[in-house]
Each structure stands twice: as structure tokens, then as C-alpha cells.
Length: 271
Ligand code: ADP
Ligand code: MG
Image (cartoon, rainbow, N blue to C red; front, side, top):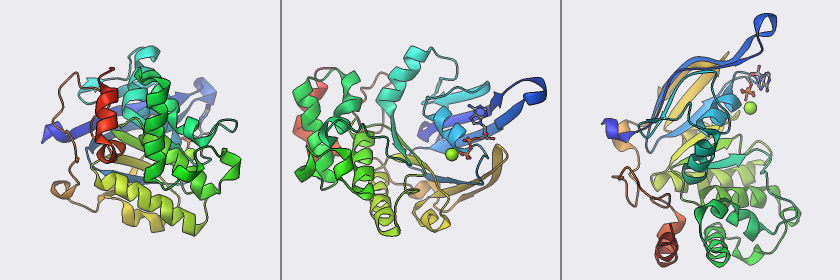
């Protein structure tokens, strides 16, 4: 079922320094990721988890190796193309939320849509429906500091999914949250996964691996163990379009769209 392969990494290596100072954050890394997987990556501090996530998220580049995303080798495309692809296909969630402090949360969530060609009104409407999904619609005009950590992380997840990305990358998203907020955030990610989205998440908390369909332990920039807990055949199927045309628009297959199909349809025409 090769059409189900979303990401292939082949011999991916990230080197820092030269000669005496040479070190490898990840080395000769091979990994195949299918659509609908919920992968949790664990491993000691410094083993390369963030480096791996940043390369997958097109925020960083490998020193060598192949990164094939949807059949296209994206390891050596221009920075401009990388950022366009990133804006279309990838949603990020970070440990420290990374919200912009002097923007109300509605505008924070609307930010990824800036590159989409939508009007500002349409962007704010989309952001508003994303916030509604996370029961934060009453707080649209709050600033990040006015919310709890758990609420801020839900805002960050709303921002990560507002653009209907294919891949959600989360780097220790519960690392700054108490256990109750962690649980709420994990339930949100679980729901997003069950809608057929692919999630790759770094965590230090072994208890969270119950949410994963696959658990990868890293050591010294390489895979130490790789265990699938759900058979490929049982991965969730995307709710909306999945048989994609080559030149598909970024707004396929998501979450917010499921709730407000009309709005999204209208917006999509502007692509
Ligand atoms: P993790 O997220 O698993 O804690 P990282 O991916 O952040 O690990 O880091 C992996 C290794 O790469 C570490 O040894 C780290 O010191 C090194 N590293 C990360 N970023 C840089 C950098 N910009 N310059 C030099 N070394 C770096
Ligand atoms: Mg890290």
C-alpha cells in the first residue's frame, strides 16, 4: 500500500561542527511513516528528537540523506518552497505554546492562514471555528497571558490545525502542563488523530504512549526500538478526501472543515 506512505526518511543525517568538534544530532536515520499513524518519539535529552521533528517539519535541513514527503524529495528544495510546503502541510505544537503575546488568541490562530490567500475576514472566521472546536470561542479576544497553560496549548493546537495540515508535529506538548491539562490536550490530539490525521509527537512521559499507534525510542541520533501497537490496517482513515490528486489544495482532509463545511468551501475558491 505504497500510496499510504506519507514520509520516507533515508540515511538522514544532521551534523554539527567539523573535525574535532563534529557531532551528529541524527545519523543514518531511516523511517517510513504511513498516513494515519500516531507516532510517539521518546529518548534521553540530546538524542536528536527535536532535530528530527524540525527536519520533518521543514524548519531545518539535514546535512545529507533523503526526505520524501508525498513522493517528492524535499530535502534539497529551495528555502522558499520549503516554507510554502510547511505552511500548507504541517502544523506545529511546541512545549512552550509559542503564542504571540500581544495578539488576541483569535489572531494567533489565524496566523497560519496568512499564506493561504484568504481575506482577513475569512481567516478570522476560520480561526473562530477552530477555537470553537476547543471550547474557547468565548475567549477569542483574550490575550495568551489571560489563559491557563492548558488553554494556551489548546489555542496552539487550534492554530496548528486551522490550515488543514496533513501532519501535526508536537514537541513535548504536555511538557509544561499539569496532569489534568495534559490529559485534555491528549484527548484533543487523539480526536484529531481519529479523524485520520498523522501525528508525530515527542514526549518524556511513558504514560502517554497509550495514545500512540507506534512508539519509537531514540538513542544517540538513531532508532533504538520501534514498536507498532496498532496494525496498519487498523489506522484511522481520513474523514474527507484522501485519494489526493498531485496538485491538490492545502485545505483537504481535516477537522475544522468537518464542522463548518460551507465556510471552508467558500474560502477554498480563492486558492
Ligand atoms: P532532543 O530534542 O532529543 O533533546 P536535540 O535534537 O535538541 O535533542 O539535540 C540533539 C543533539 O544535537 C544534541 O547533542 C544537541 O546538543 C545537538 N544540537 C542541537 N542543535 C544544535 C546546534 N544548533 N548546534 C550544535 N549542536 C546542536
Ligand atoms: Mg528536544
